[in-house]
Image (cartoon, rainbow, N blue to C red; front, side, top):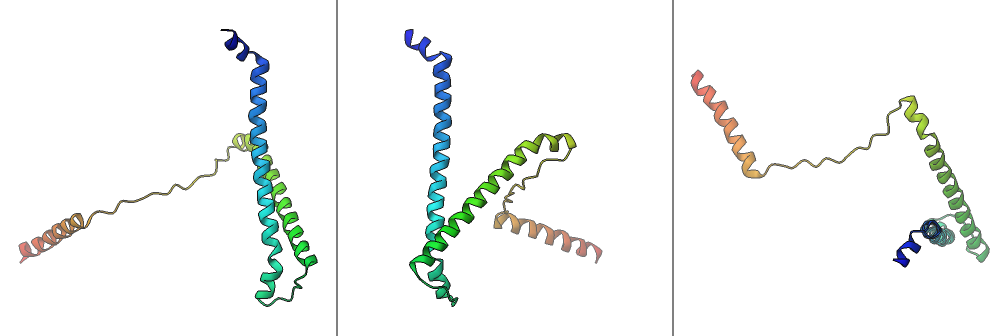
Length: 139
């Protein structure tokens, strides 16, 4: 009973919440670093690719480092701007609701089940009988 009462204390609960927040932030940060590494690596290969397609970009250590850093800087700017855009959308969401603007509609993919071939043939034969049956009656 003593352990349960200790676990229910507000301090332990706050430490647990802080731990969860730390884990989420650490995960996002590590994912960001991995993306920065991949972008830098791909950007470093740009001079090789540019020469392959016929552009005259010197393949030197300086140009490789330059393009790697340029790619990383562009990615970081993109990451900051997209994060700011998301934050602004979250902040302005109540005003869109008050204004009466409907939420963005998500188009759901509808899968239409095709009828099997025997069912199609039965319908086709029924239509043919009806069509020819009417013609025979008219004659």
